[in-house]
Amino acid sequence: MSAKSLASAAARRTREAFTLTELLVSVFVLAIIILMVAQLMTSATAVTRTSNKHIDTDTQARAVFDRVAVDFAQMLKRTDVDYYVKGTTVYNQHGHGNGHGWGQGHQTGMQGSDQIAFFSQVPGYNSTGYSWQSPLSVVAYRVNQNTNAGSPAYLRLERLGKGLQWNGVDTRTNQNATYPIVFLNQTIGLVWPAAINNNTTCTYNNNSNNSCDYDYETIGPGVFRFEYYYLLKTGLLTDIPWNTDSQANWPVHTSMAGIGLGDVESISVAIAVIDSASRALIDAASPNSLADLALDMADFRTSHGRGNGGTRNIGDLEYSWYTTLVGDATQRIPGVINTGYTSASTPIPPEAAKAIRIYSKTFDLRTFP
Image (tube, rainbow, N blue to C red; front, side, top):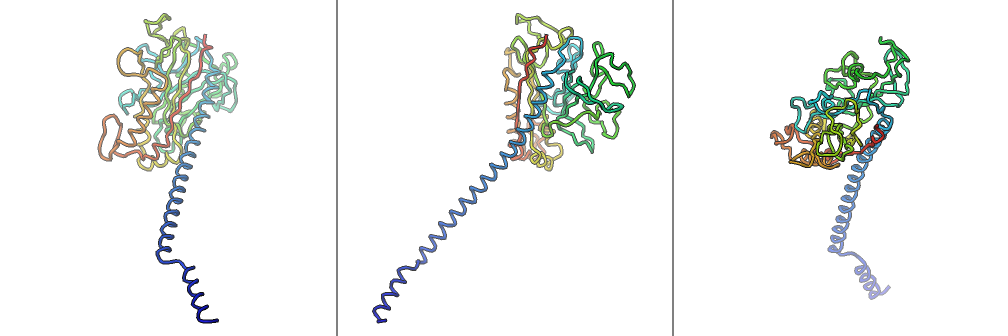
């Protein structure tokens, strides 16, 4: 090969090679692409994780509301049986179902979530003496407040569906009796005290305490807040299950005596749900943080539209809970007590607070006589 040909080949090879500048630019562009892909994958992972948490809470809420819907639909709507529902202490009604939180923490008479108990024509189970099933039950809902060690149901929604029989089926009253439904003047709390009690002294190896009943089951492991209120047939939203508004052209009552839930059009139930991973994160920050958060979520307060404060529309309570979640996650400063919050010594992890979902559903009671 001639010298000219060799020089021409060398020149072509020189033109075909990358310069150092080109290599640096290529590496820089490649680094940007890798960074963008990594950020995209991180965002996708976060979105997927959040979506999975929401799927978990959505599934729990759906299961709880489906169970409540069946129980309410089959409620024994009579005026000669007892109901343990949220009301007022003025007329010796059943208190607030042990739920006087008002969003102000552990103060006198303020226990947090509501409770409810009533008779329903749904299948029940009774472990008293021997196991058996029944088409009639005393049904109760509560968020377990037992803080004793070994209480797996603490701050979780429980349901009692204790199987009963109609009066006359079994007249015994000993521990082997198949207890019948009771009529007034006997009350649910007199015969089944666990349906209305929810203190912190219950131990699960001792069933003699008023709060203990082996027939309770956890139906909402992520439900840590439970609240309900009424829509009366007058159109008023209230925490009292009878009409007290003398301005309306409806009968005015001072108790449930003789009317049962006859003034109630529907019951609205609101729950706050957290997934298991976020709950573990909050519990790791402080064992009391979730309980404090629940107490910061206000109870329903009645407003007749005259004056300040209170709830005027369906959804107001749920919105106030959402505001509390945002406030607890962003305004708590370690070591500083913020006004309006139960405890600010340990902040709620923001990611855990974001995973908490609030749900509500209204259940029709119009078939009540």
